[in-house]
Length: 87
Image (cartoon, rainbow, N blue to C red):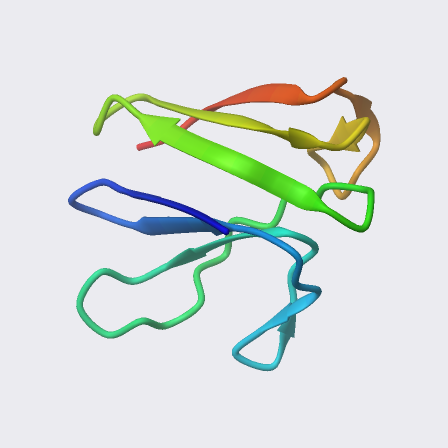
């Protein structure tokens, strides 16, 4: 449902719980050249997940969607918006 990319990763968000055989609740990152699932796994609650992803291509990723918690496997209150530092 949502996608954005940096030179290091492709970030995806949507209505999924599994990506490439790994548990990923609505948010995941993929390798830009091989599509391998990365280690980033913040998760988001709700059945709808993320609708919008944006990045400045170097330091930050912004997520908007129908969730109330994300980060550290859905333990941080984030009402519909979250920001992550990326490398």
